[in-house]
Amino acid sequence: MTPHPIQDAVLRVDRLSVVYPGGVTALRDTSIAFRRGEFTVLLGLSGAGKSTLLRSLNRLVTPTRGSVTSELGELGSGSALRQHRRRTAMIFQHHQLIERQSALANVLTGRLAFHNTLRSLFPLPRADQEIALSCLARVGLADKALSRVDKLSGGQQQRVGIARALAQQPAIILADEPVASLDPATSVRVLGLLRDICKEDGITAIVSLHQLEYARRFADRVVGLADSQIVFDAAPSELTDAQLERIYAGRSTTQPANAPAEPPVMLEPSLEMSR
Image (cartoon, rainbow, N blue to C red; front, top):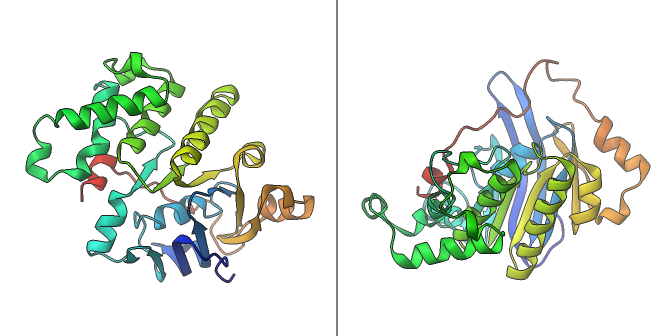
């Protein structure tokens, strides 16, 4: 598929393929571009390639072939990648929070990329703490700032994850199945909150989901994946039954039935941001 024809793209993917050890193809010759301020949902079944594409946008997955280019240049292993990661926040399905620490302490990890390693070993400046408190207030958790994360509900924990992402003052947010472990009512609140904040701040959001109803409700644009490739790219109103069949029935005939198409990436987000 040729790149999406977008003039003001903040990210471009060109003929990207990812093959994991053992020959599992997780992404196949994929080209796409993402517009500034757009809320894009990557839609598809587990193993379709959503998470691999999302992680490739921040080089948490190294492509086998192809390239990813931001406004800072092609993302390799140099300064362009470091700067890109600093301005690109991530939200994870399982939150990736330090459960024994307070909500405030977790949100402050979003500020680590603004300090060198030595400075990050000490309490961060008051200005960073004020930013973190402001981010908690935006997600409705100002009164939980000093509460341990393991005492919070799943929805509250994910809101802490959103606040941490906002503390990074990002231009782009990548959210990998952010509501997969939440109940439907909480999922709607969390996605609505994330979308509203991204629209208010002009943040480009790329969110992987498998729930069609959420994609239709919140997305500006839906990118459907099946069998490790893009099979749909348009507004949610343009999804037809035939296109949904392609997205949800597409399965690879070349991958082993028991092979995980998208192995989990176990990273401590604060460490990754500070690289």
